[in-house]
Length: 376
Image (tube, rainbow, N blue to C red):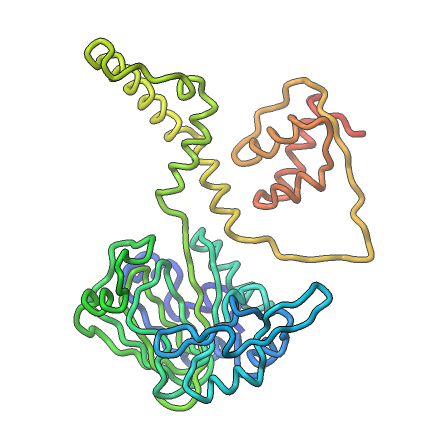
């Protein structure tokens, strides 16, 4: 079983991957251990599919020749205690597979402990959102035509074999699908010549950077592979964060001068002042902390319950006195806490679960010691 990012990349070290391999495809053969295969074999995949109540036409898809099979071709109307819902029917799914469809199980990143742990570790390593999909296909059947993805990809071949064709071209850091009426024609026209064919065997890992043109085909027999998508934040987040921060400044809420006033000089002066202030916000520790928090939010905390035990709540009430200065993301959490009539420490920890629990407890204890908070 894969335990950490080093196991996934072995024998390439995480440091070497970041320094040397991030910008180009990388094929990592299984090696002697073959432990990567165990993360999702036929037995565990069939067990997941057999949990029929978790599947819908949205997260269990059938694809044939690049086209999604309509839900009514493999789903039935199920009567549940919550009402009628469309659910994939195992027998109908098997009929579609027998006629050449491939099966895609989406959003399975939390469905097994091993996949969840690997996704969390990749999320921390890349400071990104990580998803997991499983692909089941059969010899000579191609589910998806040439395309590129909007995220980095780690594909782990767990059963059977599959040939991936990698083309010479790479889209330049795409964040949206190509605005083209015929995506297939666009991809075929822009992929460039065939650069490499990679035969994936059980335990092999293939890394593809965002935007790399590729397609894949199961050669013979059945193939099962797990794809991990890694999507870090990029520059677009600055616009939303800067807007939120700027609107706290009265200068950004003031009316703009008419463009014709003083021959345009008044508007120019006003815009110059706003841009100067915007630069100060962009370079401030506040924005750095906001981005750090946004990155941390992308990695979910492990879910756990301890029923029938109920959480004992620790209540606090702000006194109105100024609290100590809090470093980093804890400042945001404590800003919320000090603005409440009263709050539960456990609710603070739950709402700001992207901040270390110890850090939040220490911040609350510090505020209590200085008199800014009073325990009830």
